[in-house]
Length: 303
Ligand code: SF4
Image (cartoon, rainbow, N blue to C red; front, side, top):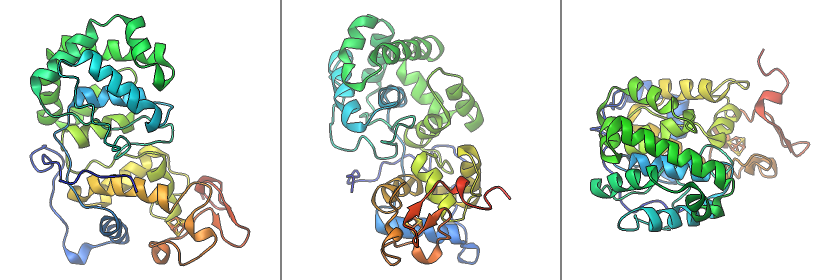
């Protein structure tokens, strides 16, 4: 299991999300049973308070590569461009809340020091591109990624005055305004935007969808077999209580790594091996033949 921070990271309740009330026992649904079980299996936390700009930087570095490759690039970048070297935590948490599967990326692990954040954005906006590319070479696609990071930094500085202003915007502005602004940035897709809203903004009711989440909830039969990422997100954000979306996201990713793997879900060989086996429709999973396909390829998908 990937390590999770020992402490909850506060900010969820104050993040101005879309409501944080738990629903009553009577309205507990199958999906809540799933989320509650995953919470018991892994963790139940609220999130928020991480540096929004560093989150974007880490996201760009992690695109199309693994945490193992992007973590040293992130550490090198922070050592060179953040005044205090950044958190440079290397704590093995790089993938928590993000993906290691070539998705859009992960959340950041800043220490919330606004002076450091401002320095980082300004420093990267002024960075020499070949030098930055060399600094992050471990992450692959370093020319393209260095250009993207510099462009993001320039925009953050010009529109928000620096990373501290961007942080405040992510935490305090109206939800749709923040999401639209994030999606308008080059290199930022829906999952990245949602991760920033969750891990930096502490917004309740945001359930980022990566490839694990996309696969699991269609296999379970909770989302339609042919639903795309945005459609799965709609289902989850509509039906999962706001306060459970954060850990629902991170715990689901861990569950996808350990149990509901893309090619070899745990139930393929042993029907009792999965803790969600009794509530799962196993869409696209065929224990008799030992095969697992994308739910969208299962007979009847999209009917
Ligand atoms: S029963 Fe199989 S398909 Fe369903 S969640 Fe568990 S591992 Fe995934």
